[in-house]
Length: 162
Image (cartoon, rainbow, N blue to C red):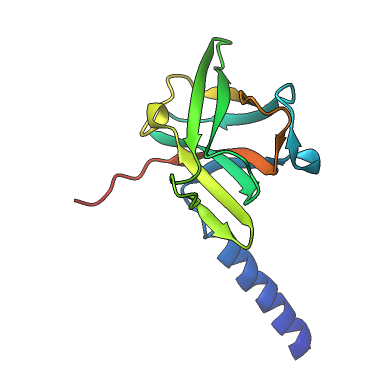
């Protein structure tokens, strides 16, 4: 009986710890790239819902291996609003310094760059409802090699303390 109780307590503690880790996240999804080869014709879709007009921050996630051939990556972002209007913008994500040192969170031979979109910093979405972001790369190399995953993150804006 004590063993069963300790198992339940451990599961409950783990669930609480995991659920409280990222309280600002509204949405986050990353799509794995098959065989680490991202074709420019392989668009990635991310569907999420905005339920209020409080300010949000929007990020693009780009995870790659050290063997990635470029210091930056150009990604075309297309956002569709709930009223079906569409906004398209190119995004240039810097990935390394001129000396080749990678930006982002790197471990082993993998780096994750979570790139904040300045046009969508502390942004109040005008409409509530379902949004779709479509991403595809616009690089000379096709397929784009050594790409592990690409994703989108929407989080609540938190004003920095003065």
